[in-house]
Image (cartoon, rainbow, N blue to C red; front, side, top):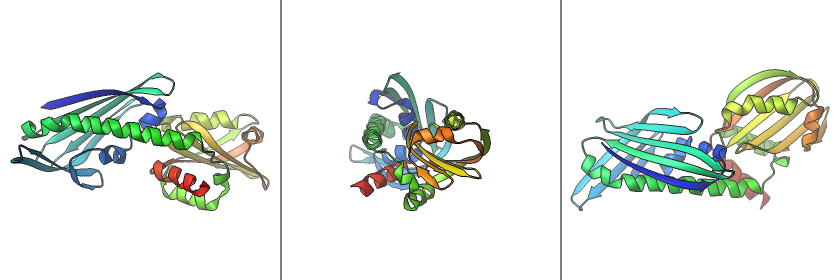
Length: 259
């Protein structure tokens, strides 16, 4: 069994970083020596001394995640195991310490073991690049007006998954705190979209990396993008919560529309 560990400090808050590492497609895209990739699987080929080679397809067999770590266990049809362990710790605001361990257990250990350091380093580099890209986009973007556009909502919902439906009754000034409590369990996702409707009003919220980045409120036909209007809402609301499966495509799309 061969293991390689890499540690790196990455700019970005912990919510952003955890959303990146819990997206398996992100991790797969930064693994080097891949010759083919499918849904939840990857084919790798390694060569040593120009004579000895190893080619194998690994499929995701298990995923273990908590608030601050994720482990991906990939297994081949021959029983070879490639394990990717990633943990994070926010050392200070907007700086997160990321630890990556890559472990291989199989018959070609003497070949694959020599490349584990490159796999770990490449994944670390990928996480850093995804963090830079997301931070540069979200810092300068306000999504409020986009939340009033049917075209944006259609794209958002097509690339998102409904994770929770709830009904709440709130008084004036209580809506925001109620929504924040409801979405706590989904903060590992980079984009969270919340819609709520009542008899006479509705609202839409979007959170990027755990921060509110867009507000749309409609009270008896009067539209507003002012967060203060949320405090005026009261009554019984049906709430839908969506998380984005392709956050990068949505973020890029907004930037391109505004260019």
